[in-house]
Length: 178
Image (cartoon, rainbow, N blue to C red):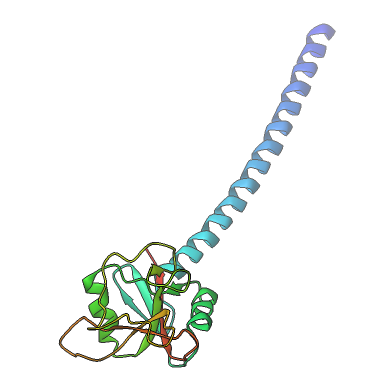
């Protein structure tokens, strides 16, 4: 009978040890799950923050646009956009050009030929393929290497002019949100 008791006690001890180990593992998994859930919620909050436009920005489609009330050089404007988590606007379509022009603001956007005269590139490095230059532009009249949208010719999307990059103008930033 004592052997049976010994075996029962040994089995009971082993079961209790297994139970304690499993309980500890379960608690560790629960803690890990809680931490991952909290991290997921924080990441979702960040994502949702960027799906909506910040105050004073205008939303259109998958983009938010910031139209500066201030004036800076083209390079200062580009840096300001970068500090806002955006870029100087890259105009990808006739609709976007019409939208930018509808802001009725003389403003820098993300196009320059500062690296190679006459070779216009967007701030992301892609070459210009479709343009909306005003008649006679770009003309590099005074060493003009940066692009500006103007609010002239109200019934036309044609509104680009090249200007010296060190002139000060308003600017338009763009941030993708989807």
